[in-house]
Length: 170
Image (cartoon, rainbow, N blue to C red; front, side, top):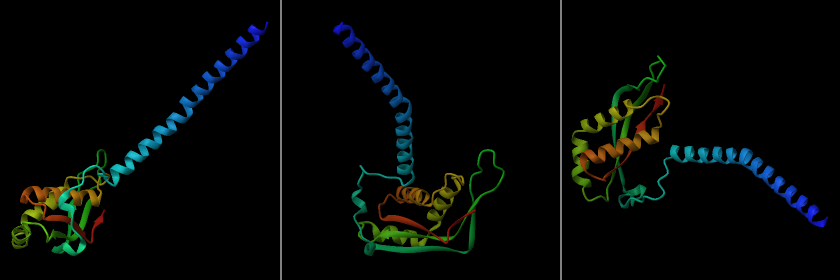
């Protein structure tokens, strides 16, 4: 008789364990997945690069020299249209500023090239901005893309930052 009661108690504990496991799977796991997705989205928005440390980024604010490229009038740059949206969106800016790292080896040559003829830099900035839609437009991300493309074009790490002057997304 004691064996039967013990068997019933073990069976009841097993069923309760199974029920609690099912509750855990169907209630806690979706919440954990949503939290993980949120953290991934936040990390991608701020573009975290924890693993990669670039040696060329060893400079201070005092090592930077800015070269402003300003337009006579505010420039309206058309963005790509959204799918299903007929509205034309534009990014307006008065100009942009290129920041040079004065400690870089090729600072003198690259800065002189850009300051003498900023046409290529203007073209890269305009094409990069125009390649985005309003919903995926992030000024920090776009400025970072511009810097990477300019660095590739001039084969340098001397150009470290692009700052938009009076930006406005409409």
